[in-house]
Image (cartoon, rainbow, N blue to C red):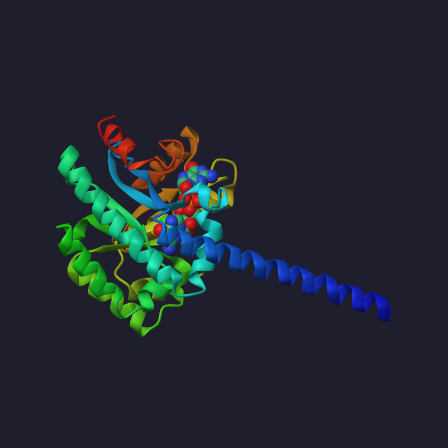
Length: 276
Ligand code: C2E
Ligand code: CA
Ligand code: CA
Ligand code: CA
């Protein structure tokens, strides 16, 4: 028995060791990507169900495969979030978004596209963030109303005073906010009332089986009703089929985002999608 315990200890410590190694490997790759400009953004359209128009795009971060093969942000963002690396990466993302908005305006005459930018908790807690946003918007001459920050419901639930102040400062500039991954973060009505956000983004996990699963459908229907009662608009993420789209339209959902309309694409692929 003693021998077995010892083996188990070795097993656990080796697993831990691998986790630590993986963590450092990703961290090193992120630093390299920052230094060598190996990040880039893809953009995924958001479509109004009322008329089928593209109203906005969500910026989604990618790392050049040459750095460490194909790696999803679902894998590297959590590593970045464990340190101040997320602040540097977040700044890179926001500036790249502003540069892109300016380029679309100059080359394509696009003025009314909203760009949704994902924000991490650490960015909200950073005293310099709101100032950085204000300065960058000014540098690229961007209307703050074109920016919508997506904050996950889980982050909203755990927000502290300083995060709340950052949100208020960004709202005072004219930036908009949405609650991302709604339905996964156990927020209460009281919690929602406290923040004046503009949009609820219903998590993909409820959309996946909306056609066949009665309770998922009920949850989405209730979320749409709740959002509208609070004066917010609703977008559903991860919409992949016409059937899902039809059910969401019947429920009065305002917008959809997902592979059905388009995957995240390179910036030059966005203008043709706008006039489709
Ligand atoms: P998210 O904010 O929930 O983004 C939606 C994810 O769902 C994206 O994955 C998108 O490509 C994917 N998606 C969209 N439509 C569909 C669909 O119809 N089917 C399927 N199967 N997937 C769909 P992605 O780009 O891999 O991003 C993963 C997560 O990484 C994001 O989840 C977000 O939490 C995080 N992330 C990405 N970019 C950034 C960033 O710039 N900053 C921060 N803080 N987080 C980011
Ligand atoms: Ca998002
Ligand atoms: Ca989301
Ligand atoms: Ca999600």
